[in-house]
Length: 210
Image (cartoon, rainbow, N blue to C red; front, side, top):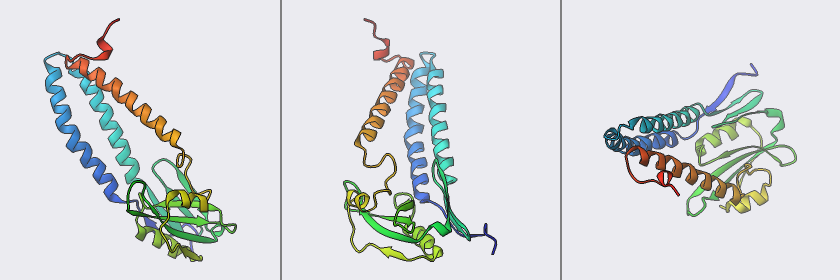
């Protein structure tokens, strides 16, 4: 058998990209329509255009990366092309798999988690239910043809990380990362909205002088 022959090919949840695109259209079209109308009388519609182009570029980038994500199992390796990073693991390193369910933070909904483990039980690769369906995980685990453990109970993410210490991504379980991201997002949104308010002739902190 050809070592590069694809035996299983799965994609992340299509609903994620579709929902994000619909939300962008539903929210963006009326918002920028109003902003263009208000800024036209000020002769500063180009500022709104700059922001509009930036938003479209971000949405397009997100859609393209999501649409290009996949996971596949070949005769010799497992490939996972995520949103940003591509990982390749040789199949002979995978000794077992673990399928568990964790509680979604702030919700009673359970999210599946699939771990590919080496001979020492160390996590090599992880698939999260937020992005991959349970059917996709089961297809990957079945094709690998290694012992699969199905956790009998749903546990919290904290317990999951404690039981599988190398399964968390670098940003998970670190509140300061989330806080920093929120702070940067608010700061960026504040600057952009202040710049747009100047374009439509509304008072803005950027226009205030001491």
